[in-house]
Image 1 (cartoon, rainbow, N blue to C red):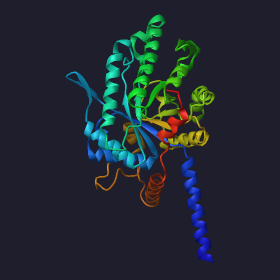
Image 2: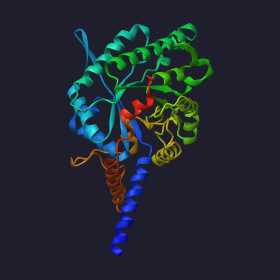
Image 3: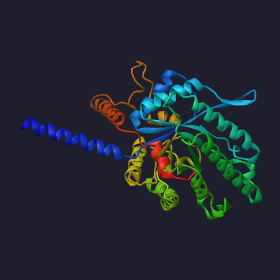
Image 4: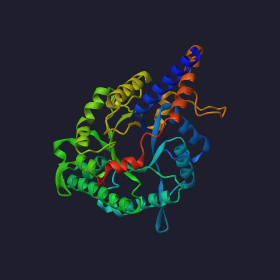
Length: 362
């Protein structure tokens, strides 16, 4: 009888843990370096890092070069292996692209051909393995045309929206399973950015939300309350437009010098970073409009959190800054338990479900 009760208690505990895991809002991150996936060891390091930290999605930058008359993805074989390895761990991968003037009208043809190259690459992946989608990190406000203001800025904005429309049309026709997402600054919801487009007079950010599967808002702050305040208007719009899993707040860990240093966690205790993430997860878990929390970016995260290479070759990295004795032992146990939980959990989202719920938004 006692054994039976113990078994029942164990089953109940496992059930509760699984329920908590399913309800936990996941994480995504940017990865900008090609070296993170071109070597087997580096690829394993990043994926093991994701498992340990609960990262379920990667925006991996891809390099595209023109060869004769066509564009091709560089390091295609290694990228293919990386996407397949990530899929085995229930980690989705986007092809990340971005230049500040990429969406200028003069560059539309080149950008479209490069998008076509991503579609062709995805078609050649092994059976049942796909990219999750295409992510654009295009920051036109860094250009002199934007800074000039007036009609030059308005044209930059129109060009940006026109390319998103073209990208949607290309994906709808050739690869409807691939999602379209973009990174945006938090201040594109100011009244000065109301613009007519596609028959509607809306804020720039709302036009973008209408034409993409999801957006990552660069809500770079250290306090969870500040992050939530920054994304509040976009969350409200997503809820009003019935756009599930269409928004990701983001936090930053890169080293920033000067007066803007406080927008990144670099230099702040890692406990502060984890506390803010926990608060954001607690507040946003269950919100149907939120997909996950984005972290910028893998290369700085590894350094900021104190990961070091495991020279034994047995695993990804050592636990961040291990403390001798009991704390070190507990850290390893926690890491192993986290790995078991995340491997046992299902994917954070199903692309088919998102596309079905999204309906005709693209």
